[in-house]
Image 1 (cartoon, rainbow, N blue to C red):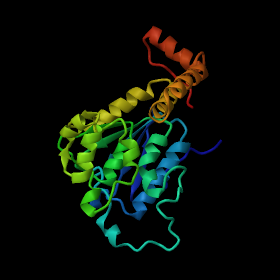
Image 2: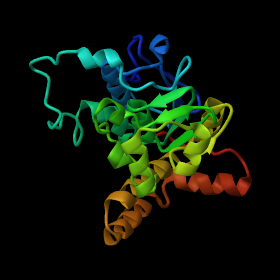
Image 3: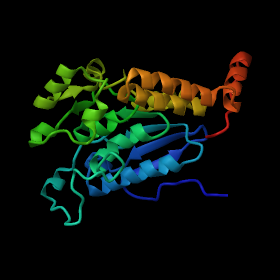
Image 4: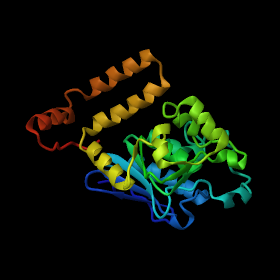
Length: 272
């Protein structure tokens, strides 16, 4: 029997998989408000790899310990001299992404839904990581900003790919060009938060638990279709819908969903 995928002990990211298949993924560099240093980038990517291989995974809750979700790039990194063998930003080292983009894009690439719980501070790269989640729950007083222009940079951690369909174009331009700060309560109206809640982790976990009670094959198929909806034309989307449905119909889990619904009982699904 193969051992389940686990996250090696470290001081940046932790993973705890519950009995219901919901994984609590936490950024744990609380003393630095979970700011992104080279080790944090490496550990977040490692966590994504662990989750991709994890058996029984149904949904993910992504949060930060301490006073913040993520304060963005650790400013100490500005003075860091890149290693001579470090890949250029234009090199695609993780499929279609570089290392810095992968920490945000990997949540969209993950087969199961990801719900981010935001509190405290969610700036710059932290906001781009949160944008990679399927759903975002923000405390109303969360401080948020697309921060990169403050440092004379552009957002380059997947934000432009992830904000499609979330934020109206002119609104996004204003947020990027001015790097103005906004609250979690305002973020919902802007399109950067799904819900506002005084206890974002509790709300995110409740949604994840509800998702975990659905046919896991259908949930994964639906997530693939959401990606296709943004990236493909109408004809391709219609075909993908049919392909996904054909693969699911009359399978054991789909039949179980029908039987449990008719009997008004909790379904028992086979893991993917």
